[in-house]
Image 1 (tube, rainbow, N blue to C red):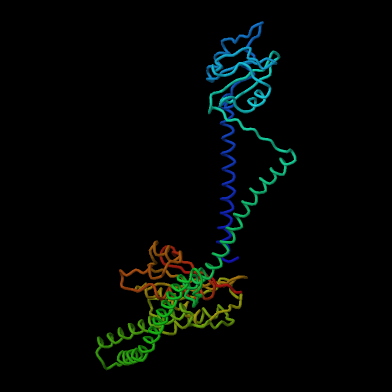
Image 2 (image 1 turned 180 degrees about the vertical axis):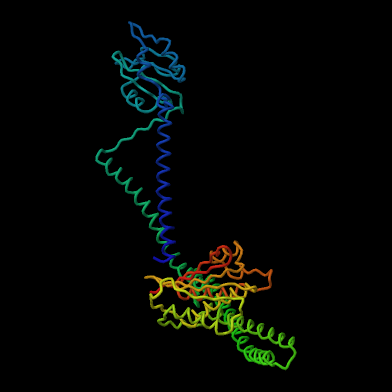
Length: 453
């Protein structure tokens, strides 16, 4: 599953969760309403017809006790009792304009509805029919009548309509999300390619055509800018090579001429050494540019890592290393061999840069150790020195894979970044790892691990 699909699946899952949460909250609110309805004794708001009837006594004549009076007055209602003939045999608060006798039709009409706009409650007694009239507007009476065979289908239809609406909402959302995903997928892929420097082109059609056009324009601009930079660096590296070789040649010739004054020979030696630094700097700049823009083809072959490391050390010793420096080579598992698949020239450059880095940053001399280790899965190179080392913030920055340029220390006038950047790019090109450590009591140790497979 790629990043785009994972993003939109999380988006859909979150939306389904929102729908479920919406339904749950509504059910919770409905339940809370019923609980409040129950605990607030809302049912007591209805007139207690049966209780009232129990407090109306018939001892030959009808009379209502004090509690019945309080119930009636508290509800601002009136009451009357009709005998079997529909005649009012007792009343309390009955409006004066109401008749004192009602037919069976009248009783049938107001028993479920209203009597002159008064909502009616009735209660059958042994001695008659109790009629309670509530204030107009306090109670709404409706009469519903359903055929029993329609009740079940109606409830099923209501539940089905609710479920269909939920699924329809989810379907429409998923459909719209799919359309957005279809349109956004190429854009997100283009952004990834743009961030990694890969060429791309988006179709400038549809609702997001303007965004596609903007990304195409940005990609073309960055590719043109990067190509211009790479061409410029290659041109400078090529053009500087001839005059630099001439400077090195003449400086070496002057340095080796015994008939010249000693200070002149020393000055020629300084020119030669600084020219060699400039040559290495240009070579590193050219190499890091090629690696950054994938212009340097990785020509991998099977190598013996021990022989590779020993060859690098031998080159430093054969070039006439100053007596201030001591380089030694060792193996973690003497006699154990393995086959490392990598680019020989790049790996040699990696080790040379690290050894050269120890030499440059320790002008007073130091001891440098190169150790090669082999196990079943990886080959390791450890380069350590007992020089002045580096600061803790710089060490942390290097181990946290921050931009090499941000770790440069300019206080001593020495560029720390380019050589280490080349090393980092070579390690990355071989799918390896690099770690930096302090060496006790002082110094720097660098460990590189390259997979054998």
